[in-house]
Image (cartoon, rainbow, N blue to C red; front, side, top):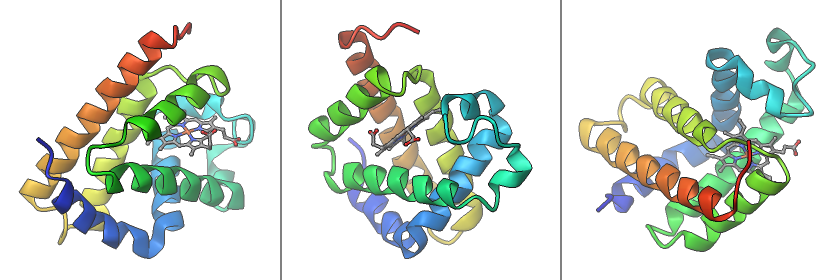
Length: 149
Ligand code: HEM
């Protein structure tokens, strides 16, 4: 069982600057895993250094974090949210499933740095469990969706 209440408590803090926090995560993802940037038609040809001031990165960070917040708020009853994400990321964006593990690991790292007061050991554990469950459910949906890399 994941402690969704604890996760939602931290998420309220994340929402104080949803776009900025999403932007930080995307930039860190591109920095630590440069191959992920190549999946984004809007960003793949722009050097990382220029993306820090790119408004589209912030807008997309907001989009990603809005969707992730919608998942978190379901407190585990997120099957339809994950199905929608899997469908577009399989068929439209063609994102291999292991990228979800990369981004959720980056999210945990960024949260620990930005919110040391909120990311207590139990909160870290709750997010870690929830993200693992989400990634594994997405992987199952990818298998059902016949993802071909
Ligand atoms: C926490 C995990 C993620 C969430 C919640 C998320 C959410 C979203 C949402 C809501 C959209 C727009 C609507 C749609 O097309 O479904 C989107 C678009 C997209 N996502 Fe994700 N995403 C995640 C992870 C990733 C990862 C790891 C990659 C690639 C490494 C990726 C690549 C893309 C691309 C290329 C688009 C299209 C961007 C554009 O409009 O130019 N996503 N994502």
